Image (tube, rainbow, N blue to C red; front, side, top):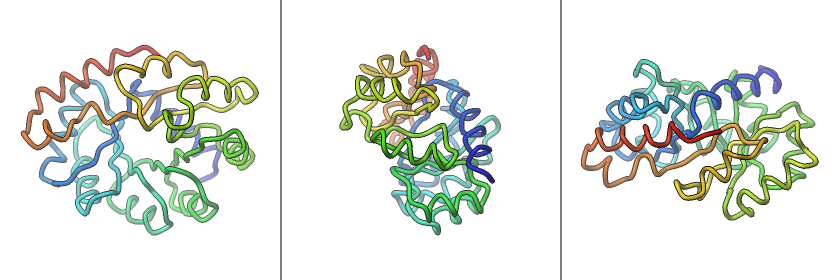
Length: 213
């Protein structure tokens, strides 16, 4: 997969809804009902972070949910990429980017939202052929004003800001011309997942799905 093809597919996935849920799944038994609730609420693109022992099994379970497009987040090594692809991930997300990670995603045909926090990082990825990136950590890197400033000289690059995005500030990001979606964890609070409150999570997803890009 070329970087250009990867970015084309990433753009399509990011265009499915204004918010991509960032999910930390600790119990794979929660994966399928969680995915069903989020998809029913209008958020089909799901990022499962590889931060728990249950993450890969959760990706496998979520991949069985009709209408969902499941990806793997926190990709750091080439082995992460192989494991994610084998589990059924349709896209990947990384906090940053290394040549080894980019090579692995291209070899595995896994579209990647590579992380960038500065103009130089974004330019380096753009030089390789990527024009859809993750802006991370969004709030710690200056928030929407910083991303707006980066967009001035680099209008060719689109971003999915993640990290500190919440209902209070999501629209400040989504209103930017260089933002196509945002990543957020608030649509699947840990306490609601633990309680199996899938109706409540679907309602949160519905609210997030109405945010304007």
